[in-house]
Length: 319
Image 1 (cartoon, helix red, strand yellow):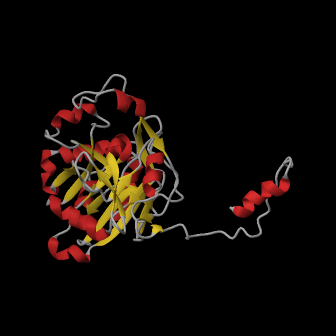
Image 2: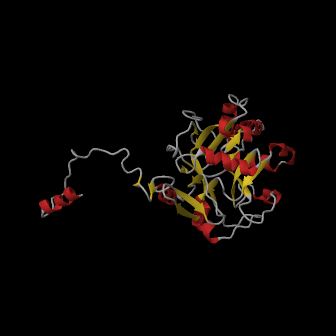
Image 3: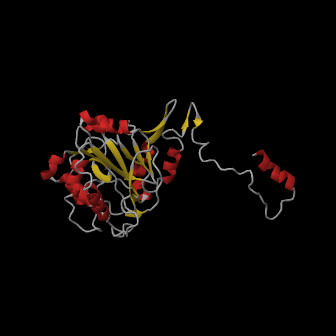
């Protein structure tokens, strides 16, 4: 677990940019595995993320990009709006890099040999919802009323399917899957302080023409990672006989990772009641019998005593 038991020195991300300490931690960890050319490392947030698809589906979707590194996307350029004009124009989709999710493709011969390490990071990029819903975003310049908040969280919840986990504690907003040699080359470029901004670092790496050999791309149609904020209104549930998936109506895609960033925790909780196999048409609630508690010896009291106690407690017997 990266950062476990260590002091956070990545800045006051609740008020300003920061998070560079995570890049340093990742840099140190990749030193141990950078020679494993068939290894893929994935970083996503933990407590507010649902992994809805299988590793095979994830790898298959990587291959469709035909790029070594693929970054998740968002509709606004953070944290430096002046870099927006350097991004290539897109006719549709989300244009800008979001370091809350990156991933990298695997060579076809090694498709079934890849080992996945899902790195769970503990925060989300939170944008004021009233601003996002009411003010059109011009990608070339920041709206004067836009207030961006980075919130720091430190809770961990397990993933939906079991694979080796590499967890990063106390981080603002970052997550990615990467083909190890390329990710290793990227983090070697980090020469900054722990409280410098990590997303700005990854953005400049992506836009640097001299680093085109890293063969990066952006998941502009959210085929792999979907961020619910500000895209919650684009998402519906797709019901099959034995599984349920979240579908992005805007691009007609079925993302593998659903990130309930910012003020979308209720939407994420709603989706996680069904996705990926919590409830199905065939089996109903698939997880209702898990981790049940024996309440046969639980005492029920009513203070103050009700006027008709037998009727009152009879309701509990029926339940």
